[in-house]
Image: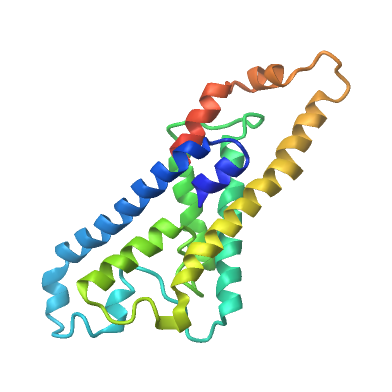
Length: 215
């Protein structure tokens, strides 16, 4: 979702998006298999490894039964919208951006904060790569109804985060990044965008590198 959103605001090349999506999906899939292998002994002790619905929730997200489809979609849109606002703020060349190596740590903290605040309804997937590949892995492993549970909930952690991320990126670009640039340039006929970048210590190359670190 973040990769698509960054590409939508021209901070990430569209040509690289498919590669990143494939890499993230493979990471989520094999990560789920690794968790299954590591904990297989304890899972097997229950005697109902593939029958217990709660076990499949270890790998991918499922909604609470008292949430509606619309509420679930809104939950994912809002959570990813907030995440994308934070990501854009961290890589904005007009901000006092952190060093590129620190940015992923701060993004991780943002994900944790969003999870603690908005994780009750659906488990805060807020990224298709975090939910769909593990869900596919559990289906292959033999878990029942992973794609039909929650009234076919599986599509919501795919569509919702993409919508939320794009909305967040566009909102930040229009209402914060472009506005702050105009304010910085206001009153100075000689001010150029490159001057602003230099004064804040972030070059175009550094911005691209920061974007790559969170995509």
